[in-house]
Length: 140
Image (cartoon, rainbow, N blue to C red; front, side, top):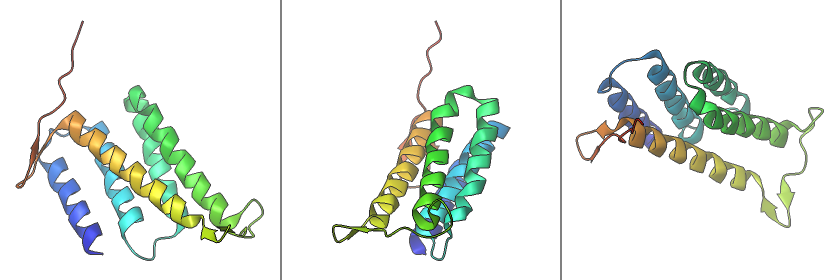
């Protein structure tokens, strides 16, 4: 739970130091919820539904976020399928002695890390212990 609290606090502080827009609120809400999903204990697979809703709302405001939204939707549906199957009966997750839920957990962590790094590079971050300058946008 410590990792969840630290990541959530860092995301909250990064958002608080940014100019406020509704699209940015959606992006940081997705990041905060992904931190909850990835790092907190006792989180259920269907909790990713809210992330999908927030992602599709974000696409209406920033069309370039479509890839992010599709990735979140695939992750949510893959998690549901892995744990509930097609008809509500869980398929056997152990293949060749390896539980494939470990791979999905790793994929979700990588998805969260990628979204976090992309957002911090795009918006910049000025936390107490490090700074990231915002990505320069070029207009032609």
